[in-house]
Length: 333
Image (cartoon, rainbow, N blue to C red; front, side):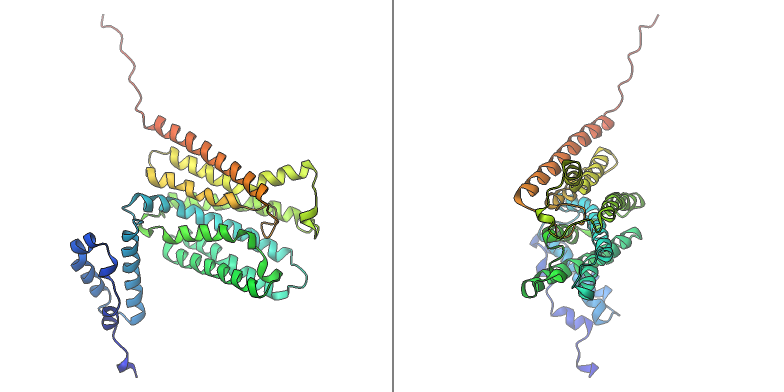
């Protein structure tokens, strides 16, 4: 039976590769691409051969869409990707925590399984980044995005708490996940310094959010949407909605202000701030009600934070790049 299966080389000959590359790049490097692939699969099995082909095909599509590490757009997205992943992992940790500590009656095991499938891959992806494994991190993010999309589809046919939890944040998850997935892997900063920034931003978002959520566990009435809180409660809750954006904006400011950071990648961290414009009300960060007024207010706050961080970061970067002017010497006696 195994003799009837095509070899790895024969299988790859049936798949397009050179045609995926832009014409100019194909003319200049077509033979080199074919040689690299042939060498990589010389003694490989079919699974390894398909993985090598997929890596080259992804590179071809990044070149065709101008999202490679040599293109400005690719470098900008690469600058945002680690912090988008950090934000997704932080929010997932909070949701997993509240889901385990505040189970809803009548959902049983199904809700726990669904919630875990949507949140755990993000946390595992962050751990992969911590050990400099970006490829597995991207695979886990893809798994998380597909899981959330699957749950959203299931909710259309089986509405209920098990499938509708976190529904208001679907757009946020999709935006973060897609940007992480299309970032050119060879431009993502996984240096010790870059990983430190990523982990610090995740902790900076997750710890206060988790603390607030745990503090309020069990205190929310079932008719939360109809409750009017006193200003002493409502104002801090509204302000804490923008906490993830504030942490990410400060990271954006710090990286933009550093002359040692690539200008486009530093500016790209602004992308990691923008998805938080659709953040819903805390502290449970699940399916809290959100109306147009709340989203408009939160978007204004997030954009204002981003604008201030960008202006301050640009000014600090320019100041640090400007060489100190030598003091004028006095007249020689």
